[in-house]
Every structure is written in C-alpha cells, then in structure tokens.
Image 1 (spheres, rainbow, N blue to C red):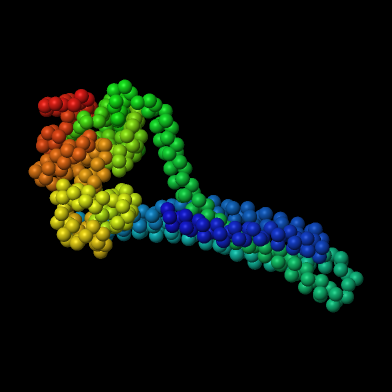
Image 2 (image 1 turned 90 degrees about the horizontal axis):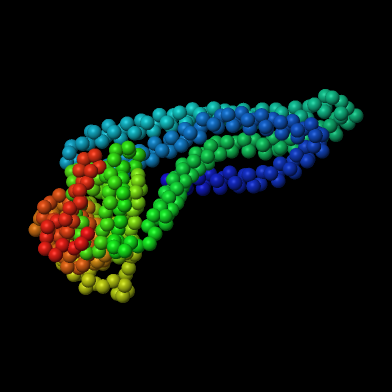
Length: 455
C-alpha cells in the first residue's frame, strides 16, 4: 500500500503539471488558429479531439480493473516472500523448501499472467494514442488545405501564400499537439485510477471500521454499572470475520478487579476470539462489549503466545510499548527494569549484553528461544504493572514450575488476570473458569479455592 501511495503521488504530479498549463496554451492557440484559418479550423480540431477521447475512453475501461488485479497479485507475491523470511527456519526443519518454491512460483505465474493481460490492453491503448497523434498531423494540413482549395487565398501571391501556410501550419500543428498531449495522458490516468481505487478502498474500509467502533462504544457502554465491573460482555455472539460459524453464543460475563478469569476449551472453540472482541479487534455478531479500563500499558496489557519483539536495546524491549527513552533521562527506573528481569528469570540475558542500552546486532525473535521470548514478555508485564493482564497461553513454552513462579509474581503485583490456557496448574491462580464447548456453548463456574473473589 505504501508503494501504491508513492506511485499515485508520482503519477498525479505528472498529470497535474500538464493539466495546469495545457488549458492556457489551448485558449491561446485556439484563438490564433481561428484568426488564421477561421473558426472551421479549431472546431475541426476540437471535434477530432472529442472522437479521440471517446475512443481512448473505451480502450481505458478494461485496463483499470486489470491494473488493480496486477497490483494485488504483486502485493500477494511480496507477502509470500516476507512469510518465507519470517518462517525460514521452521520451513527448513520441515524440509519444505520444494513446497514453498512451488507455491511461490505459482503466485509468480499468476502475477506474470496478469501482467501479460495488462500489457495487451495497454498495447491497444498505446496504438490508439499514437494513431491519434499521427492522424492529428494530417488534420492540421487538412485544415490549411480547405481554405486554400476553396479559393479564399486565390488573390495572394505565392510568397505571401507560402508565408501564410507556414504560419497556419505552425498554429494548427501546435494546437493538435496540445490535444495530443492530453490524449497521451491516458496511460497515466489509468495508473492513477488503479492506484486510487486500491487506496480509496482501504481508506473506506478503515473509516467504516473506525466509525462503527466509535459509534458502538458510544452507544453501548454508557454509564458504569453499579456492580463495579470493569469489563462487560452482554449477550455476545462471536463469529470469525467473513465466517458464518458461531464460535461463542450469547455469552454474558462481568469481569471485576481482583477476580481472575481462566478461559479454557478445545482448540478452535473461540478462546482467543473472546480476547479479540474484548480488545475491539473484532466486532461481535450480536451483543455488546463495554471496557471501562482501556487497553494499553497502564490499563489492560495483552501477552500473546508468541510475543512481538521489536528492534532496539534490552531497555526498550522491557518498557515496550512505551515510547523510546534515553539513558539518564529520568523517564525510566533502571532498578525497576533490573528487578523485572530478575523476576522473569532473564538476568543471564543482561550478562550476555553487558548493559541495558547495548545495541544488539541480531533479531531478538531469532536469537531467543520461545521460552526466553515469553519470559521477556513477562518482564514487560512486571515493569508496566497494568491493572489487567490478558495472557493468551503466554507461558505455554515454559515449564509448570516456571509458570507458577511467573503467575505468583503477577498476583503479588496486584494484577487482575484473564488467562487462556490448558494446564491445570493455572487453576490455582484464578477464581472463575469460563469453559467453552462445541457449537458456541459455554459454562461459567467458580474455581473452588479459599477466599474466592465475587464474580
């Protein structure tokens, strides 16, 4: 999409520079042509331009959808390359090189086929514009020939007639050339239309999502309920976007501070889907969602099964997603960072780097093991200490002992936990279990533990 925006701006600059200057040139040379040849000259050229524009319009129509398709396939091809780069190690372990090569080649063939069809359509457009240009030169001499052979200039001497022909030819040819330049913009206008279609389509969808989300939030949440619930799911039915299969049906759930929720169920039952709806990434098919504590570093912090490790120093990894800060700026508590690393069991990582601000020349996601990546995500949690922590199998790559230790720290820091997991050891740290079943069924039950918080 960024390349489409760049191309759109470049093509618009080319088209705009011509369209801004051409009208003034057309007016001037139309007047000069009318003075030299009479109004029959410019009218003939205008009529010729109208016919040429209609023909080019017909030739442009099939090009625009082909250009949109070609741009989409090009994006898909690039995405496949990026996907292979990200998952190169997993593909190598699976010995899937030939499979990925075949699938990538298939996308390339689709792209080449679309490019060939686009080139064929652009060839006809190019023939049309070039034909217009060459016939325009003949038309300029025809405009001069009509008054000559009709006897308008019969009384002029040969020298004067030659001078007049030379002047009229220049004016007429230049006027035709002005129109030819406009016709020659056809290919650029096709590119502009194709890029505009893709960018406008994305912008329309994003604005619609934003408007719908803001409208729903304003309409549904209203005032906080008297039961001090921070997160409310009321009669919510969930289905994946673009799918008719119901994952969760008519779910009503109130989450209060201090009452930890454990979400369990078989794979594909909709556990992560509930979290996506909570965060506003998905819209429910029915029902409403009210979140009175916003998602973010200080409110509700989300830890996925595979954390996102951005570039930057170890300090920036721990404080993520806070904005970048600098050493000795007074904005970050180094002792708190060190304590967070110690609580997550990553003091060895600090020893490897030497200090918090060392610029590592590696990709964090490639050097750290899955367990270390999850520990680093927990160190973020311990540093930021949000009110709510949403853990989507965030400790699945760790042993049960390590998991117990990390969850113990979470409870000591006073966070309210919303966890997705399968291990029975997680029940010790939660008060209520939401168990998802087939066909959108669900069951909410209290986990029998001493001093269970009200839910």
